[in-house]
Image (tube, rainbow, N blue to C red; front, side):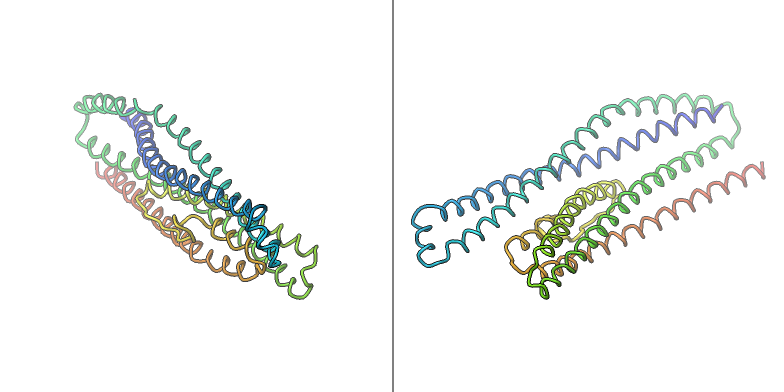
Length: 311
């Protein structure tokens, strides 16, 4: 009789814990939404300023001045490169904001569908308590152990979800590293081939791959951080940039205004390493945490077997 109560209570408890996780993730995502919205506004203003610089070089007194001293073309190319970089950063920020907003909408909808579970849980718990009054003295202890096991099983599931998110982050780090390594090889060949067209095309193709991987990495890091927030694990991934997650902006700032990109690529590789190492450490801690939870379940199972043998 109690097994059916326990089954229903475990099911409801899992749904209630899911509500708590949803609240934690929504809190983190709304914080990210506020930051990203502000960043989109800042980048839009920056793009307007960069475009204004280009406009001034294509007409008016400044254009004539630089034409006279022979630097108009050089200055125009530099300003146009900065406009391109600012435009790409704005586009990336908008995509991130849209992705965060979509996730908030999805989680809000899911959270709204589980509000009734706490009331159902309390009602079923009272019903079970009434049924247990007529049962043996072991019932209370057995129920307590089963409830602890159910809670530990939920914690293991949440830990596994966090580890899955962390493994996705590590895979994306490796994708970026590979693209940067290929780009570095091409940049080194530039020294010997005097910037051959084919080599230039390959180099920028690899850098474009690195940019796309970096944009995806930022989103995966946000998801990983949201998963960890439910386990009360604080993180600061230490990627370059004001909010710790702006690797793409930091990296591509340099590429579009520097003629020689080899040193910029090498700096990017060095800056990736500490953040990747931190994610690896977090995954190691999560595996230890999971092992500890499984050990506690084994101890509770032993208590149940001991009670059965001594009864």
